Length: 118
Image (cartoon, rainbow, N blue to C red; front, side):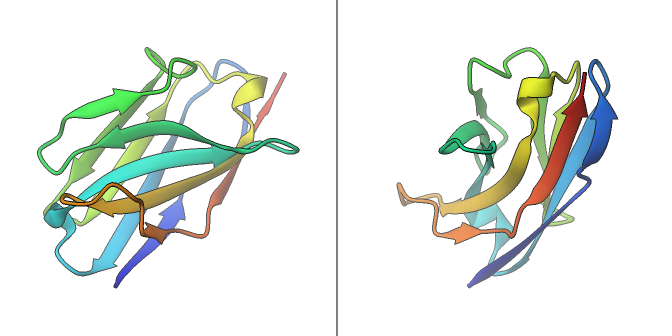
């Protein structure tokens, strides 16, 4: 089992920045790729970014160039640095863990709310 706890959400003005953190406990953190997803009001959950155990990352087009995902395997933590935030970034943000040998995100955090005001 892997337990994930997100933090760092809040209210920010458009153009501002936030950094989300996701602390993992349980099995070996470095065995998992980590992903960030979000769900905006009235919309389906969507992919935001992912980072492999070795640090390779992929981003959704909507956040590319503005968001940066990183991880600290020594601290069992993954981060999402969000810059130049827009009102359309308002959502509940979730982190998730996918075993390196798997294709499905098996473990999810409870989510943290990000609200961007115009």
